[in-house]
Length: 114
Length: 116
Image 1 (cartoon, rainbow over the protein chains, first blue to last red):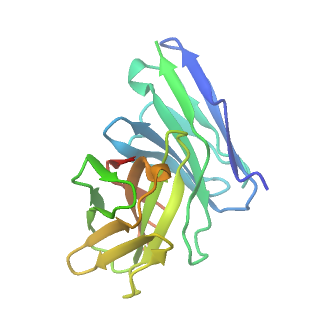
Image 2 (image 1 turned 180 degrees about the vertical axis):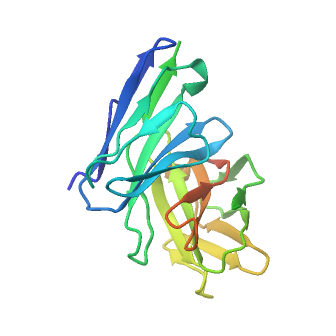
């Protein structure tokens, strides 16, 4: 049971490049989400999904796309990277109706956009 | 909208002493969960403790306990017998059971330093 995995751990991009951050979970969780963490700002929700084929925007969705074709995977796409997207990105997953609501986090991806 | 406020950006405590981290929140929902997460320098988010809003009893996990005041919308974390390994960023988080089901709202965090 690997929990929530994210790749890569570190990435450097040039302005305008695109890339996909990968996230996978093996706990059969319905809910998956992406957060970004910036100094002094806590974690802010980018996009989330309550099940395969269903996604929705969070607090800071601009510049990011997501899709959820399977229960296990929830990739985050940066369409045209900008320096403002320099951040640490976390993927998380949880059950929706278990009565515990604990979200499990991946190890994070540190992204730098030059 | 849900908001979570942590008013202490930084705190420090001596080893073996007790420290309390503050958190307030605002919501119109009646059913929700509250969490404290710890983020050490490794960056991994670790769940410290959780509280269900409908439970009046304050949650405890070993040296960690909360003071949950529902009417005041306050949710503080007390760490007893502080250890050097408790040095980390601590985040308070809210998870509603209504229209925002599944979404976590975080405070900005409190950096706790435990010194020998």
